[in-house]
Length: 497
Image 1 (cartoon, rainbow, N blue to C red):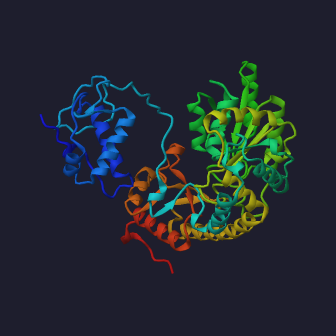
Image 2: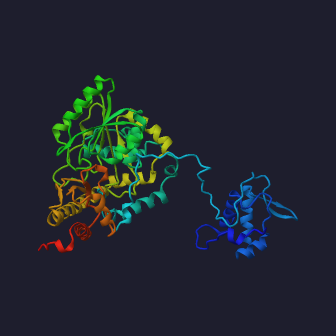
Image 3: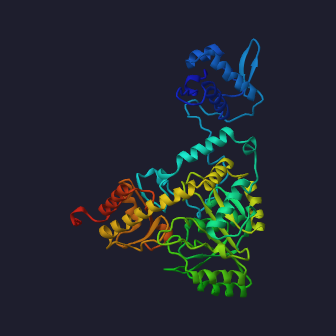
């Protein structure tokens, strides 16, 4: 039977892949799925070139590639053949479309992880009340590009080599000074490990410091991804109440007493102390003092996720718990995602040196090192004041957007959505009237190009975070109008002057 190479070998002239590589890949794939069997003779280079309508040199290059990889053998005076040394493969008929996907019968059973959920891609929506993301259009792109280009062009060769899993020493030196000056800390470069963001930091902490079935305290309302991460690592979460001042610290001591009596001491507590996630409230000074005292008394770590420290509108930000820690019990983490843009994957963990060394071991086998050039760029921007000026500018912009969003929601949907104007952060914690389920409302607004959380991460509260920072005033106005139309039929709407 004549082999239909014209049908089997699909060539895409607009592909970035060279045509000779496409031909070589096509032939090798057809060998692997059994269409081209060992010993089968290929067309000569001239005939194949005529058939595929390409230059003969292209086919010669493809055959040379296949020969170098061992797929074919070239016999003088006889021609080019599929290698005889390949194993027998169950053939697929020409009428079947070849595929390299594993079938159910040939692939091992895959585990079905019911804990981890994949978040929706919010950027595909035209407008979004997201979880509280920055407006990437405001990012200092020119300075980022200038410094990045500088290091690529003129950086010493050492920055292109492997570096330490801890992160580049210059960034850690500059950043430790920055944290000491702005967060009231007393740390050295050895107390910092860079990561690819807060999520990587949390995973490293959960993997390196805890073992299966270790007990952790979290709030009943909590950052969903943290719960997902620690549950996936088989850690046990003890949930305690949340109120208008954040996590209820009094409930912690009760749990500590019970657990210690039962011989299963608590290992850690996780919280977002500045703008509590999801409710945005700030932990009071009294609770902070008591929490540190409890950690010292019962010997558990405090994992402090300070995800948007820089964005506080009412007054000077409250210093993190880590600034008052004198016993090495606070593990402080954050990232530059909220300050600049999610695509810039530089996060950090600040802790006593013994913890950092342990985390670095796991970072070494998970992700050899961070982005050295980006770390150096950020070090420069911290030193020359670019990040400080940019943060001050965006703080003013985001405060204006917060005020505009809150006023608009109150005027247009105040009977349906209840919320408190947040003192900081980039999102509003909003509770919707239960006659308008978020599970349905989120689908309605999505059809009109607006993202709104379905609230499933927060149980039956019918509540979600409504990020305002990533949209300008015109976009916020349009987003609220879409939300309003999906909640209140136009015939029932009242016109506000």
